[in-house]
Length: 148
Image (cartoon, rainbow, N blue to C red):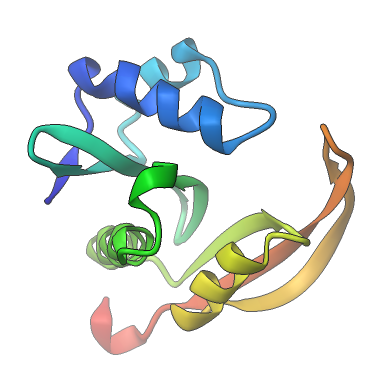
């Protein structure tokens, strides 16, 4: 089930974050996200446990997917795609025209998920990521006018 993130969920989200990213966001960063009016901060829960989360921000008529992660032991079950669909629905409610994201250029599973959801590569940001240093693929999805 997709739900809005609450403070009580942050310890589980931090654990997923630390396991998923070599340079994780801080607890303070996630705490701030719960208070940002132009953020869609959602979690996928099952049996009272957080299995994944995503953070989408809006700026004008565009959105940026800041974060998406799924617990390692819950991957390959469609949770990432469910979170993406929910973020896209939030973007449509906000009447956004497109969503951008950056992803490690070598993260083939994530890129496949984004392409499956209709994102296309529009650029590269050289040496964007650290630990290890890696380029970022910049991707965008144009949202259908009829869905807005």
